[in-house]
Image 1 (spheres, rainbow, N blue to C red):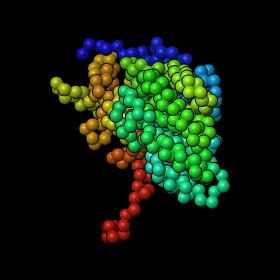
Image 2 (image 1 turned 135 degrees about the horizontal axis):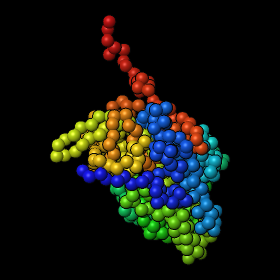
Image 3 (image 1 turned 30 degrees about the vertical axis):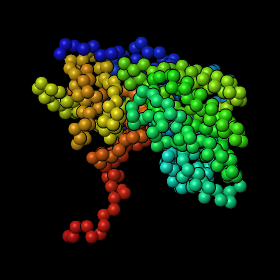
Image 4 (image 1 turned 90 degrees about the horizontal axis):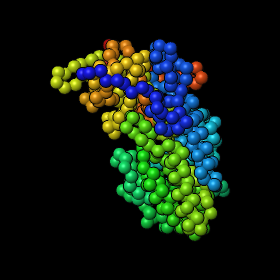
Length: 457
């Protein structure tokens, strides 16, 4: 094929709006044109820490946290709090940064909750979600004074049992499905009526009346969420009206309900074709809609909560791979394989997700071919990128895949018993290991071989 110029990574993007970038804001080039992040050479990081390697840019993570906090302060006249949806990427280091920036955190398991607490997140800024919480998870939340998002009647039954003899009321948010459709993948749509999450709208009044008689419960707010990786603004405006109606009902039944949680869902830019709204635009639209909806119903403004995940950490992360084997199928595809794949990034095989990738040391070299970037797993569908324009490459070259900070590490697995990658956080010329690489022998630590199956002699 003719030479195909690679897009100049980072060119033409506004560093002041981190959500719109394809790349972390600290990405630049050294004197030889090789990519650096926060002053650290990417190929140097690959050699030092090995590959595959997740890399998190602390400056981008802090910038997106501040973008949410400042936008809420600018556009919403009442109290507000942005809460990090930690399912996007849960670690002690990320929690510590988010906590330092004044955000809260949303956990959906005992593991995420313990990570939040150990990472320094104040319990009063943590909410526990989940459509099938265990008694152990709820007990942990009660022990630490964490707000519980009630999702169903089973939650209420378990909480009532756990709160017998308890004198202090449990802070609760009530989640319901708002019945709003938006254009996103079926698997990540959570706001339409046919969803496993939340009470149905026609259950709102019965559950609110039930909670009014529960001495152990303090309903401090309502929650609804419409999905993930959303570029549209209008569904979020519609959500404000639905939530305001529910707020009026709750307050009318005697619940003070000081909080209104609109969820998250703002998408990010994975490829040049993606055009999500900026964080400021999204917050302005949501905040304005909530103010208008509440004032038109004569309601005092609640504290406005939102739960960004992907848009906080997605573009802060990238993944480094080492290129290995090549297979050319005449008339079909050229496969270039890397030393990772679906175990460190399951999104392509799960959602058909697209990414942007270049060579770490020759990011601006013209592409000489289009390849299928394949993973190393024993699965035909283990393909990270199809029809990728790629410069001339050799085994051992380091490939950079951008915008992998969300739902890569957190959804990773040990498929084919491949160890999970390490994670490095970079900041102002420093590179610090924040999650160490698993070793193959560690994958056996939970196996138990019955004595009768042990070979004799």
